[in-house]
Image (cartoon, rainbow, N blue to C red; front, top):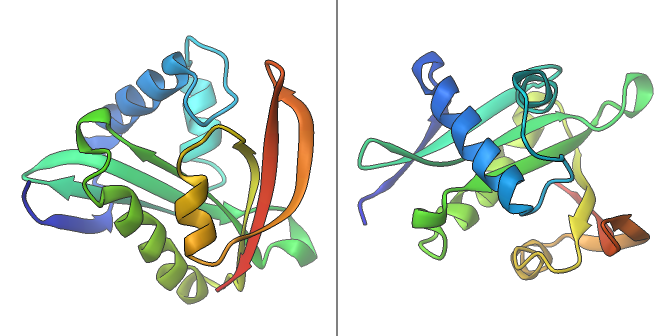
Length: 157
């Protein structure tokens, strides 16, 4: 595997990110959207209202991405929400860790002082990474999606 390059997503990668996210939604991996993913659902998650989308590129391929956006409006907008996707071909190669670490570093430069995850499926293997990087569980949602419990995480940045 080549070097992981992180940078704001380019306009020509929009279709690739839609396809990657649609595959993840279709597989039921990590997001509560019901397949098939529509362009409007994608835009509501990845386009508006989003502060930034950062792409991970490996050897010219979109290997993954994340977004940061306010978790809530107004006076609570200083807390970010983040979402991460990594293509199946790049899982276990450090792409996910690079994305998460970059979001921690980048969040304060965008005016955020914390990052909160609202629904992390209990079965999500990324939970170990989040906890290792300082997120702490602040709640659980029973039967969040298809009978699966979800965890709410928070950390200061």
